[in-house]
Length: 231
Image (tube, rainbow, N blue to C red; front, side, top):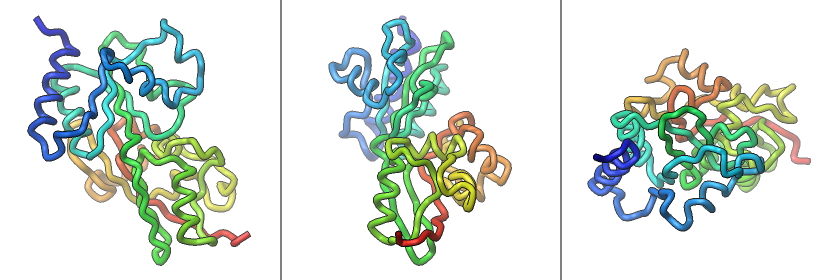
C-alpha cells in the first residue's frame, strides 16, 4: 500500500507530465543526489542543518505558475503540507521546516525571479523568487532616481520581505515594503490565480505583512517605486 508521500508524488508527476511544461525536472526527492544541496542552498542558520531537524520529503522548483497550482492541488488531495521559500535566506526556518507530524514538501520559487521595471509609471512587477539585490539592480539599470523602500540585505527574498512587512532605510519617509505593494499575483488553496481585485481588499491587506504564505502563495508583486536623489 502506498504511503502519503508516494501518492502525492505520483499525483504530481502525472499531472505535470500532462501539462504544457512537462520536460523540466522540478521534483527533487530524498533519493536525488542533489537534494541536500538544493535544500541547504539558502540556509544561514546552522541549527537547521542538524540531522534531528525535520526535512521535507521533496523540494519542488516550479518554472511556471501552473507547476505551483498542480502542487497545491496534489498536496490538498493527499494531505501534504507545503512550506514556501522565495529566493532568499530564512534564519527562522519557517520556509524550510515543519514540526507537525504531517508529511511536507518545500516549494522553492528561485526559478520564478523575473523583474520588469516601468520608469514612466514608477512601478515594477517582480516575481517572488527574486531577491532584494536583484530588484535594486534592475531598478538602477533603468533609473538613478527611483528606488523601492525595503531592507538593506541584498540576499533577502521578496516573498519573505514583503510578506513579513519589510523594514528598511526609507521606511520613515515611504513606509514599509508591504505598504508599497499595490497589486499581486496569488494562488489560493483552491489553485486559483487571484489579483488584488479578485481577492478583495481584506485578503490583500492580510498578505502584506501578515505572512503571505499563511493564506496562499504569492507568485509576483506589483510594486510602487519612490523618488530618491541620484546621489
